[in-house]
Length: 148
Image (cartoon, rainbow, N blue to C red; front, side, top):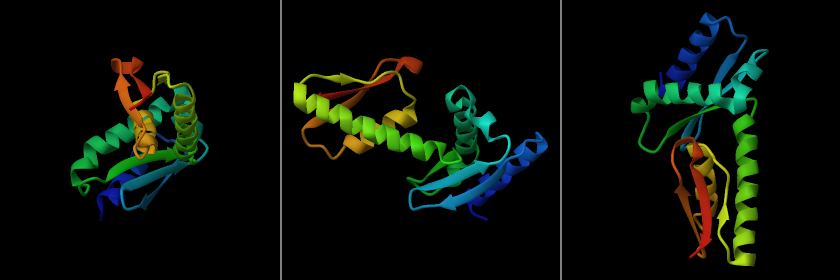
């Protein structure tokens, strides 16, 4: 079995053991293993801004990450929560880029998780006139977009 399938089986056994009504499905892409969870208890994973979902993803990466090919990562999602959030972050990145170009001033996002900052860095990486960097410490870490 692949690391992706192993991770899905592991999470399913954890959820079953905790008597949570969640079903795990695994989809492999060229750069990730997407573990999608659905069921009556899916809202539980999204409480507190998805902190439990982040914890499940971190745990999965810690346990099975070494088995993954170089450059491939685990993404845990609940009913397309992360996919929707990534689309929102991409739109926010484009808005920030337009503001920086229009005003010539720095745009500073509010505190974000490492995954959220990564999405914005990736979206704006191809923009030759903009520079992105993470600033701050811990939970207060933010992303700054500035002209080059």
